[in-house]
Image (tube, rainbow, N blue to C red; front, side, top):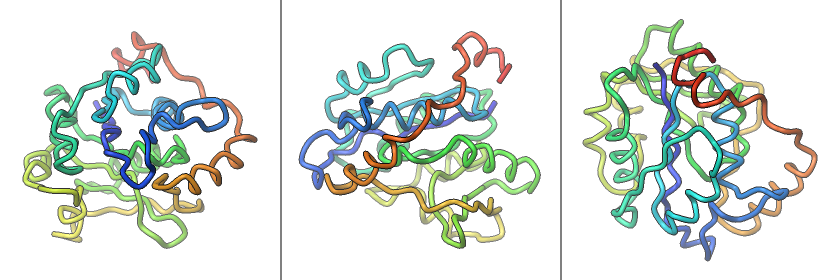
Length: 213
């Protein structure tokens, strides 16, 4: 089983309000991100919420996901990563770590990571967008304990850089996804998403649990 952990627990200090709830083309930002993840070939999706967690949960109503709350979200991204890893079952073979504030990450990007991981025989798969590394990143379960050693707000960058031989790249002819850090970023995505079609079919939870995606 390959899972996805969507990190949606940030404090949104630069944005000024809870950016995960900010509307883009009629949907909350976090819902766009999660719908794109669900349209990929992952088998399980865990959302880590922090600031205004009940409202984030409500924004995802009806989607076949699990939402966990990180009460320590102000201590940095690493605490949300820990909360997401804690929520995974023993049958998870690998996890794709997705940033909740990157709603333009396509399902095809996540599928490319899964293919690179399965074909490359290495425990870390990273996307390369026209020559530039970005997010999300896939980690084999053998590295989960190593990920838990990360502290502060650095995420998993040090784990990726520690041993380059462990990393396989997934080249993509796509632009680097935009983070939503400030309201101006949201305005740019609003124009992009206004002409975006509906995400690909999202399988019901019962199908996803049986691995029929």
